[in-house]
Each structure stands twice: as C-alpha cells, then as structure tokens.
Image (cartoon, rainbow, N blue to C red; front, side, top):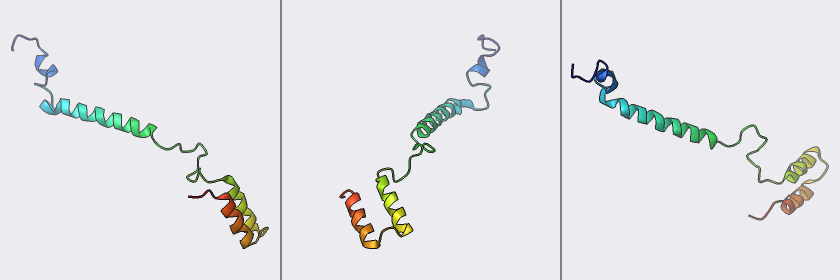
Length: 88
C-alpha cells in the first residue's frame, strides 16, 4: 500500500488489463466514432427522391418515352434531344 487509498492502482492503470495502452485505445475509439458520425451525415440523400442524373432535364425522360412508344421518329427524337441537352 502506497498511502493513496485502496483503489489507487485500479484507477490509474496499475490494475487495468489494458495497461498503458488504455488511453490510446480510448482515443482511437473516439476518433473512429467521430469519423463514423461525419461519414454518416455526409452520405448522399438516399430515399429523398434524388436521382443520380438530377442535373438532367425531365423533358428528356418524356422525349425518350415518346420515342419508345413510336410517337416520334428517330430524326425528330435526335433533333429534340439536341435542343433539350445543354451544351457541354
């Protein structure tokens, strides 16, 4: 007994199974937790109706449906697609 009380060794690492690596493991755990929270909140909005082609005009979808149903021919489809697509 060193005169510091009965729990001195257990509180300051003397009786801990982690020994001197306990603080390092806790810091690593906290860093990983912070990284996981940041990663979670930076994920793209899934399930909110956003599509990967969100920058694409919705008129192109209508045009493709009309072409698929045979309402317009290929030349008209290509011309309208050029008109609707913004220049790159």
